[in-house]
Amino acid sequence: MSFDFVRRAEQLAAAQRWHEVAAMLEPVIETARSAGLWSMLAMARLHTGRRGAAADALRRAAVLDAEGGRAWLNAATVLSQEGRTIEALDATRRAIELGFAPPEAHFLLGRALQETGDFSAAEAAFQKAVEARPTFAAAHRELAQLVWMRTGDCDRAREALDTAIAAHPAEVPLWTERARLLNAAGDEAGGKAAAAGLLERVPPGPQRRLLEAHEANLRGDFKAAVQAARDAARLGVEQGQALEAVATAQLGQGDARGLLATAEDWLRLGALNQLALAYRGTALRMLDDPRSNAFRDYDKLVKVFDLDLPDGWVSLDAYLTDLAAALAPLHPFETHPVGQSVRSGSQTMQNLAQSPDPAVRSFFQAIDGPIRRYMAELGSGNDPLRARNSGAYRVESCWSVWLKPGGYHIDHVHPQGWISSACYIATPKVAEDGERKEGWIRFGQPRVQPPGGLPAEHFVQPRPGRLVLFPAWMWHGTVPFSSDERRLTVAFDVLPA
Image (cartoon, rainbow, N blue to C red; front, side):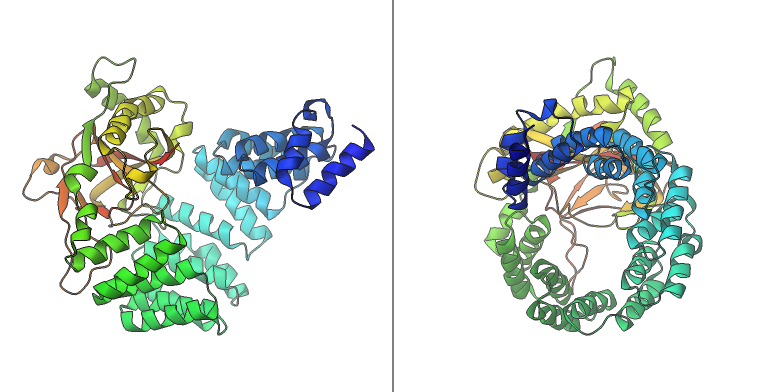
């Protein structure tokens, strides 16, 4: 590789002309034993939307780098983002073994160990990260959540956070994580107190006004929340964040016309924003506007399928038995994660798409036919759901939930999705009661209720082997159930391919 060639590549990179960098390096890179050029190609691939190929290039750079540690950690970061957990774990360990062990290395190690199911080692890694940097909020978040899920003990889960806050009381992100944990644990009073404590430490400005809007929404002072969020937007906070706070408050007030205007402003920032679509549909329903019919056509939008029988099983019952047995060890937790819709239950921390278990891997064969039938029945159109229907898809994420007696999902949408799902593997007997509808999935009930209420409009009964597909923007939750049995599901989000 000539000096002039390398210099030209460096000049293009400095100018951020990444397509040209990639075009120069791709034909010759296999003959180049240069960690620097492989790293440069990785940057070009990242900036041109090829993150998986960038991860491969970073691994090649790490192999060639005489020092190695930093390069391996760079590779681990992108491999983790790509969901290539085993490779990310290996790369992180290599970095640490080579003596490059900043707090970020222990954080990435913890994430990878958690995703492979080694929760004790993951907890120890997160603990090392926060010991090395007590103000490392992301590591505190993961540590607190993992301890909370494993024990159900909120006091124990926040021990490291409280210690860090006592030593660094001005660190706003630490207070934020404490508030999130308390709210997830159902400590309403503690969550409100933590939110108030957070405000005391944020200087005047746009971010404080946005936090004041969230805190007012939490207290139910929706008028104050609208004003604070509008002030935050005027002062320069990210518009989408401000509009979400305004929309939440307007729904709580029952201000349907204001909510419709806010949702439409929000959609002008991004037409595929699923939460903004949900608020728009809700506003139209509150106004009894005929345009709400497109959001409430449950017969066409919510479809129920039986799983296809995957290869290797003689019956769907036999397959569901094996799938339930494979999923059970992935649910060792006492309680739900932080920031998710689950209450009184557990959610897997692993991406099921990466599972080596035959029954779990075959799940993706079992859902392929139903997904394709759903897309075919949807057809094409100009609405936000059908306009994205290319006839091809990819599963973006996949997880399992095991609800305990009394468990449920709070009403929510999937902001980053297109088509969402609920697939029932095992269901409580009480769900057979069509009057009480315990354990049933419900649609159309927003999480924040306006004066007078806005109840669910559609319900689907859970049965083993049943798959429900619906738009990601559609409000959905679960009716709590009271029996001693558990309710085991798999859920996933689909995006157009």
